[in-house]
Amino acid sequence: MTMPPEERLGFDIKRAEQELIAAKSAAVKVAGLTVPQYAALFGLSGAPGISAAALARSCLVTPQAMNVVLKNLEERGLVERTPHPWHRNVLETRLTEKGRTALATADERAVAIERRIEREFTAEERELLRSLLGRAVAAIRGGDGTE
Image 1: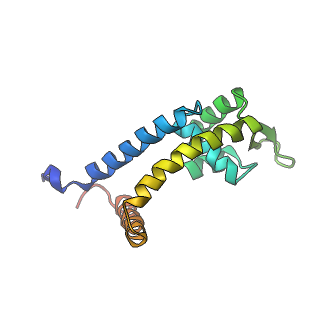
Image 2 (image 1 turned 180 degrees about the vertical axis):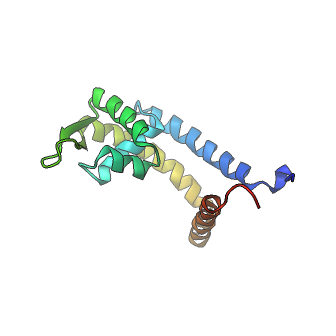
């Protein structure tokens, strides 16, 4: 069965995502960060000491991908990783002062993008959009690729 391109919402969702990532990539580059690095620093700012696995879940990436990001951030002195006091095979990750500075620089520019999006919608429209996107996610997860 064929579906005309103009009826495919996936394309519109992907286009919006790609525009957002491109804009945020340019924004956080000023701080010397990539979007995944920015997301990791942002996640760590709200959950100091979080494990790499938990951070990966919050950033919607695999634990392997997060470990690569964290290794790079650690090598650059933006995060520090220390063994958990009770679970020696778990590393706690925290921002360094240099990491907080990079995050603040990047976040100021990322927030400007979020504010531009926010201004395009009323509060009610933003809530509706969140609801509609949530339903789209649920539909995607619930389907097997066939009708």
